Image (tube, rainbow, N blue to C red; front, side):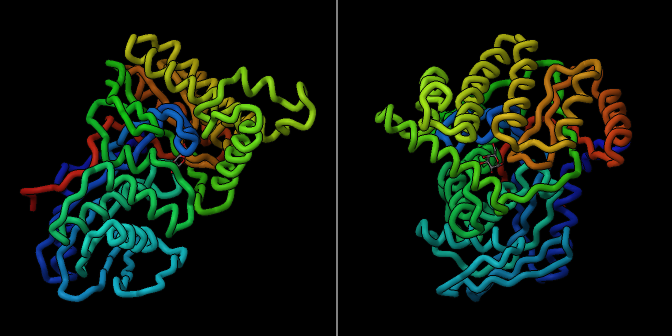
Length: 402
Ligand code: GLA
């Protein structure tokens, strides 16, 4: 296959970044690494207090850091060859629609959590593709948060790191994302997906089925989250809860609603109750929660046909009810269904572009990648990137390299 990720020796990237850092900032850094994630199932359920089943992947954002004596962050992005400066004493900081907003947002939220931040020099490199639905933002936030904490000689529980990174995106960058991505980047577990209850934040690592690989196919269609459609979906769910609460006062989120309850309030059944658009948004979320639990259960019993069926239903639900797919994602999923070795395929992440996740039997992975690339090129004229990823561990400091 032409375009699998070439996994470099584990320390090649941090050593290169440390050299670049020393040349630029004349100091020896500490280095932190946080993974992106792929979601096996459970899309747009996290901000509805529901269930998700993501796995951290072996694509990462690395941050090299050393403290400064002033109150400024000097940040260099190796990917972009671009530097940014952040003044930590700025009393009215504003997002600039720039990559450094994520750094700035995380620094502010750390300070709001009572961490006395010092100035620091930082160099960043990431191989998580941006705008591909693999959580490049969360990988950046979690990597930065861990590095800034270390430079301040402080620690926080991982769950606090996940939450403050989410707040950075919600309150500073302006995307009302849920907790899934930051949680996966913090709590990823090698060889496992994570079944997370986004209300209680209780989680259970679930081993990926033996003999099965995660093959991620990038449609190369880029999405953006601070763009309105993600926030619009979230508002539609809130509207659904508001309407349903009139009949079921005990509910706080779509997590609390059953499909039977939703059906009985549908406008076709009872005029003026739940308009069709809101009904469909709610239908996706409520049915998706049920699919996550069914998938996790089937995975642990080795019932791979059920896993595949849930993934197929999930994709259709996102296409028809939640309307977050696009032609290229649908083409990629349809092509996968025709290939030998496939267990299940669906779009993954926020939607409107990005990647599909395919569970493929190990023996078929190489052929699957070659064939889907060729067929996708034929159907769309686009060269897809294909990544075969292990389920990876969460954020960590890298020691003893270079
Ligand atoms: C984005 C968000 C997550 C989640 C997914 C959709 O990745 O960051 O919180 O809502 O979309 O499941």
